[in-house]
Length: 131
Image (tube, rainbow, N blue to C red; front, side, top):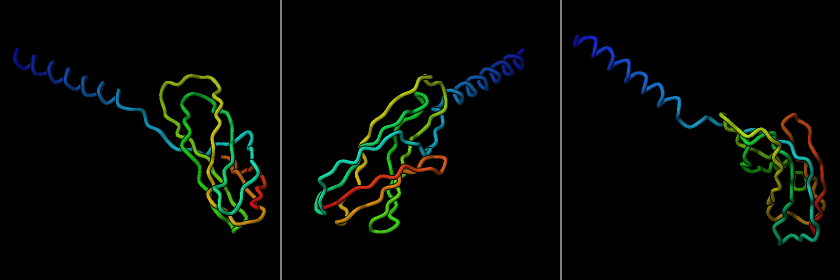
């Protein structure tokens, strides 16, 4: 009789452990996202911090804006990559629009080529003039 109770207790403990593991936080990963449009304001000079305003649409509620990174190919040519964190699990299945400022910092005087890369290797190119 004691061995049956011990076996039942072990089964109950294993079941609780498995349930606790299943309820841990869902995993997430960072992905490159595409943008729909980029607004490049004017009036920047070499002493001001340049920025652009981007917008796009997340495919569902599992996506959250993470940020962007800038890679300088030269003093006047830059690649910008926008990232989102995608969590697994239950998510609202609606399109979610977003608008974000991307700070580029101080740039040299002249015309800068900005390429906003998307997840499929394509990009949107814009020019930014620093006076």
